[in-house]
Every structure is written in C-alpha cells, then in structure tokens.
Length: 395
Image (cartoon, rainbow, N blue to C red; front, side):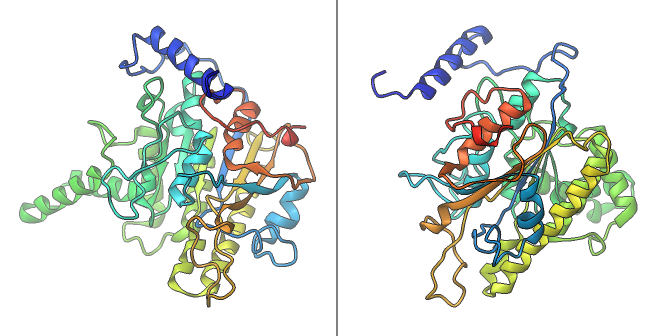
C-alpha cells in the first residue's frame, strides 16, 4: 500500500468515511442525543498509572520488590507482561505525559507543549482516548468516566479529550484532583458572600487565574451537579484548609475510593506519581513512593471486591508511564528516566473478567498494545490505535 501499514490505512479510511457522514473534515462531532446510545453492559475499568517512572527491579522483581501486594498477590489473579517496552523509534519520548497518552490512545505520537514551555507537558492527544471511544458508543455520563490526577502535575489535568474531529470535547471525561477542588471551593466561598471590596476582587481574580489553566473547558468551568456534590461531601469531611486531607498519591487513592462509592465510574484512570520524588535525591523517596502505590492498590482492590456492582465485574490494568535509569555509577541510580534504554523497560498487569489468571508473559510487547486490548475487553474498537491486542491476556 505504498509504504502505509495496514492499521494506518484502515484507520485513515474509517476517518474519511466518518468525516463524510458528519459533513466534512472540519466538522466537530456532536454528542449523541439522550437515549440514542447503547447501554453499556461491559466490565468496569480501573486503569492504574503506576506513575512517576519505576524500574522493574523495585516493582515486579520478586526478590527486590517494594510492591509486594502487586507482585505476590495480584499476579495470581491476572496476567503479568514482564517485558513490556516503550518503543525506541526516533521521536518516541519517555516522559510522564507521553507515557500517559501512549496508554490512553494506543499509539506513539510526537507531542509538543502547547505553550512551548521548557519541560512543559501540556499536550493534546491527536487521536481519540479510551474515554472518547467508550462515551461515543455507550450511554455513559461524564461523571462516570474519570481521571484522578495528582496536585504536582496540573498539566496532566487536561488529557481528558483529544483534538480529533470525530471525537473531542463532547466525549471527554471528568477530572478529580486537588486543583479541581480548589476551584470548586473558591467558587463556593465567593458565592457565599463572605468576601467584600478589595478582598472580593482579589478572590475573583484568583479564581479567574485558576480556571484559566483549563483553557479547553469552554464557557462553563463547573463540573456538573454530580461532581459538584462530590466536592461538597469532600469539603464537609475534610474542611477548607487543605491540611487535613491526604496528600500525594494517598490523596489519589482516597479520591478514587470515594469516587467508586459516590460516582460509580465505569472507566477511571488514576495517575499515581510519588516515585518521581526521587528527584529530591534520596533513594528512599522513590522506594517509599512505590510502596505507597502498592498500598493504594490494596485499598482499590478491597473497595471493588466489597462492592456488588464492581466485584467480579472490574478490569484492573496496572502499567507505568515510563521506566527509570539503571546507572549504577550514580549515587541515586534511578533518579532520571529520559530516553535511556531502561526508561523504556516497563511492565503491565491485567486482571478481571475474561483475563487469564496466574500467567507471566515474558515476550516483548508494547505499551501501546494496551488500548486495543482494553477496547476488546470492554467491547469497543480503538480504531485509531496502532498497537496490537494482547491475545495472551484473554482467557
């Protein structure tokens, strides 16, 4: 096909057909009318980004793991791909944002920060994310498709939809994060009438600056009544000061568990990131971060196992955003992760309905293989992904 691979040819053909149906390539896809979508009857998905960059040694190596629940318990319930890789092809970067979008889109793309900031990670997906595929085909409201994001990576707040003309904002997911709560809290405080004069003007400007970070939100920056109620319950429990609620990745676990109980998500991605604190210079920051994610996994599994709607009906996909360095000559050998060989060495663990149990697959597979595999398990086609379905995962 003149140098075009089969997957790209098929995806391009589908895009052209869809474009003609929707009125041309410049047409923005509109959300389907209520009641016109299929009811979703497939499994829930909890997609865990074992993030911040981790090595296999401290995660899936049974003799050196700081994540014993993952390695010794969860692997019995699913299939571990111990030799997953991020491609070393030219232009494929191994950053946190890039890895997250690799997982969500099923392809490697060249991403540039939209504001050209040095080390900026404000990227926009060029093809649909898992959230968009699911919500375009099935009747799933935005509050049941969630990203749970960390307070230290606000740039990653906005990976909620792609700029693809057949998908986009109408099929985006919602985001739970400390940043979103701060916006909600300040908005409510202003509405309460507690501020006056210069103080009120200052608070309004502060809210304007916070909301402007989400430059893709549109005219209405609120998150809808269901998530607004979620934040009100969070506020009633933890208060306004921010010194009571958990922080770091423990915050993400708490948000995710509460979301399962209150919002009932069908697809939720949790962007853990504490292992990246190794950049402060101590190896213990990294290993403790790995252990904190492991503790979070235990809570998430226990929460789902104890809930009738999630028990035996929830897929877990656990995968790092990227690996880390193995430079033994450095005082902290795993401090950096950019584009070295070991930064491309990751893993993935899948468990849940229709997934193989108690199997370890050591052949080389790709990070971008996860999106089409998830699509297969959930019942939709990730047509624009370039990865392959991990057939070894399927029971």
